[in-house]
Image (cartoon, rainbow, N blue to C red):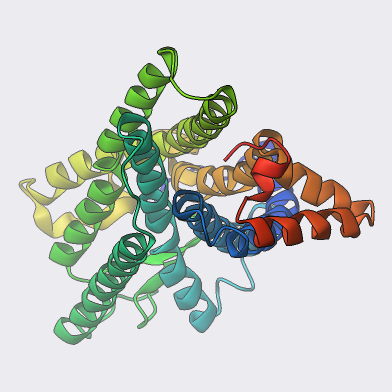
Length: 361
């Protein structure tokens, strides 16, 4: 472990950023969930809009879980000694660590599906988007990821019951250096497998996401055909998804690059002349070079960037989606009757609230 100590200014900045994302992200994602759930019920006659609304709803749920589980991180950064009360509890540490082994990767999946499906709609306007297929794919991804994580955990606990001193028998570890709880495989092979698995899940989806985003931008540059209202609505919806995708890429490139560096150093360390000296992350030379790499690289790239992304998404929705803005404004101005009337009319006519108010789906 690095001999350096934490930087209090950096601690305060990281804690403030996390706190701000928590305060903004939790209520805004709750409002997004409520809005998309209500809007989903009014789009039963429009399969294409239902398809995207369900993706936005699922994204809002995942973003809510990401933001609401950051309160222990705030405690870590705002405590000078980083002795977390919550993370030092073995049960809480294991639950939090396991949840965060799922959420960031599920978020990657959702952005990928959103970006690719919008590209397909632009390239093949007559293509039918099957909501049942979307649910099957989403459920299959979640279950397969869950099975892998549980299998990795169980296999490590069965094969190696001797846990090094200082590590919990739950295989989830909190250290002052990391700043959060994470899965610790006692077996070096499983540790390496888990690291490459995480790197692959974060990195490979970047390729189709970038390609679909690029093709969508190219398609937007061409003059579309059809009625002006449909063209404007399609452009508005596509630009919204492109913004969501670009923000996701900006927030997730740092953690992907960190995993690449870590994997390269990990291979070098495992294949070194003295593998018996291998002690995972803490003795990897590059992570001891300076204070940021030693104390902040993982918490910043893996947690804070994901939280920033989750807090920004509902802001993008508010900015780009007129009916969502009207829903929020009506909610806080106690003018709920107007929004209720629009939803009722939409449900009766089969037209979405967006179409009644010139929206952006």
